[in-house]
Length: 336
Image 1 (cartoon, rainbow, N blue to C red):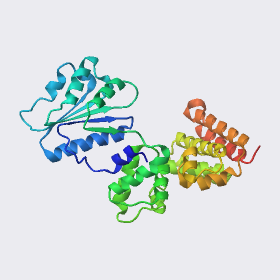
Image 2: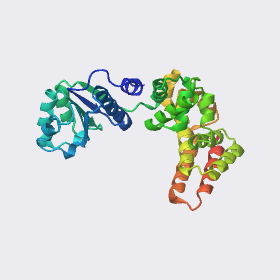
Image 3: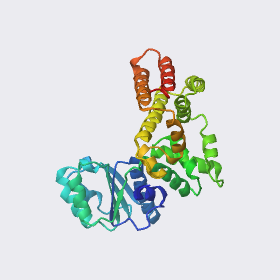
Image 4: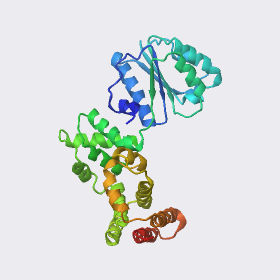
C-alpha cells in the first residue's frame, strides 16, 4: 500500500493543531480526499466545538473573497474554510490565495482540495513554495495494494483480518474504496473480537453478485460446462446483472493472458502486480493456465467481448448470449 493511502486509512485525526495552517489535499481518490477533509474538520471541532465551517467551490471565489471568508467572525473564535475544485480558481484570485497561504490567520484552518491532473499545476507549485502546514496526496492504491488498504481499515476499527481474507474481500467487493471501507467496518462490527478469516468473509458475502459472477467464470475457464451453466441459471434467476457476469469472464481471461506472458521466475508479490490479481488467486491461475493455449485464450476473449456487446443492446436475448459465451469459453480451453 502507498504511504499516503495507508496514512489516510489508518491514522486518527491530525495531531498538529490545524488552526493557523493551510492543508493542501491533492489527488484523484475522492474518498481519500473527503476523509482527509473530515479529519481536519474533526480536529478543529475538538479545539472549538462552535467553530464556523464554510465549504465553497473555488470557481465561486472572486477578488477579495479570501479576505472576507477568513476575517474574524462575530459568533465563533475559530473557522474552517474548505475550498474545493482548486483548478477552477479564477486567475485573478491566485495571488491573493498564495499571499494568504504564506501568512494564514491564526484562528482559521484553510483546506484546499485539488482533484489531481495537470490543470492548476502552476498554482499548486506556488502554494507548495509558501511552506504549507500540511500536504496530503490522495492517490488511489494500486490494485495489488487494496488488500493492505482493507487490512488498515480493519485495524482502524480495532479488528484483525488474515491476508487471504483481505484479498478475498477485494475480489468480492471490487476496487471502490468507499465500498471496501464500509465492508471492512461492517465485518468488524458483526464479528469483533473474532479474527476475520477467509471463511468468515466468504460466508458473509455468499450470494454477493460479484462473487457469483466469478464462480461462473472460474467454472467455465476450468472446462466444467454443466457447473458453469447451472451457476449461470442461478445468477440470472436471482437478478445478477449480465454485465457483472461478462466483466468477471473478461477479468479471469485477461489475468490468464497476463500470467502466460509474465516473465519467468518472479516472486509471487511481483507476479501478482504483473498479472493485476490478488496473490491468493495465483495458485488457481497457475492451475487453469496448464489447460490453456494462446489461441484458445484469444478465442475466449473474443467470445466475451461479443457477449458484452450483446448484453448491452447488441442482441435480442441476453440470456442466450451469456450461455453461448459460457460454452465458447469452456470449449476454447485446451484448443490450439
